[in-house]
Image (cartoon, rainbow over all chains, first blue to last red; front, side, top):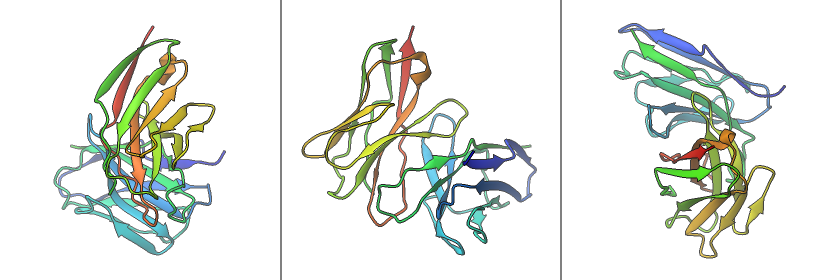
Amino acid sequence: DGGITQSPKYLFRKEGQNVTLSCEQNLNHDAMYWYRQDPGQGLRLIYYSQIVNDFQKGDIAEGYSVSREKKESFPLTVTSAQKNPTAFYLCASSIGAGTGFEKLFFGSGTQLSVL
Amino acid sequence: DAKTTQPNSMESNEEEPVHLPCNHSTISGTDYIHWYRQLPSQGPEYVIHGLTSNVNNRMASLAIAEDRKSSTLILHRATLRDAAVYYCIGVQVGTYKYIFGTGTRLKVLA
C-alpha cells in the first residue's frame, strides 16, 4: 500500500543531543513537509521541500535541519539548539505543483520527549 | 497567508447531521479551502476541499459562501468514529504553505 512511514513512533532525547526523525513516502510525491504539534494545539510548519535537493524554512525552523537527497525521503534533525523539542512531529507529502489543489497525506507521527 | 477562524469545540448526537463552520475573510480569490481531521495520536487525514462551488464526496459535503468569506463542512450523519479535531485551512496558489489553526474538536454523543 502506498503511504508515508515515520519512524520511530517514540523517541527520547538527552540534553545536548541531536536526534533524527525518519520520513519515507512511496507515493511518488514531489513535495514533503514537516510539522510540529504541541498538546492541544494545531500544526506548525517547520520545513517543506518542493523537489529533491531543495527545501524552504517554515514558520518555526530554528533548531531544526532537514535534507532532501532522495525523492522518497525527508529526514528531520532536531538539534541541541532546539531548547523545547518535546512535541508530536508529523511528516506529510503532496503531489506537488503548488496550485493549492493538492491534498496533503500524513504519516502517523513521532512523539519526541526529552529525558 | 489566509487566516481561518473556527469554534474551539462542538457537540453532536450520533446519526444527526453536523455543520462545522469556518471563517476565512482574508482568503484571496484563488485560495483553495481544505478540510482535514485528526483522531487522537494520529496524523490528520484529508476530508474535502473546494474553490468556489459546493463539493461532495463520500465523507462529507463542503458548502462555500458566495463571497468565499466562510465555509461549512457538513457531515450528513455523525458517527462515533467522526469524533476528531477538524481543521479548515486556506491554501494559496503558488505556495506550499498549508497553515493549520487550532481546529474544532467535535464530540459525538451516543
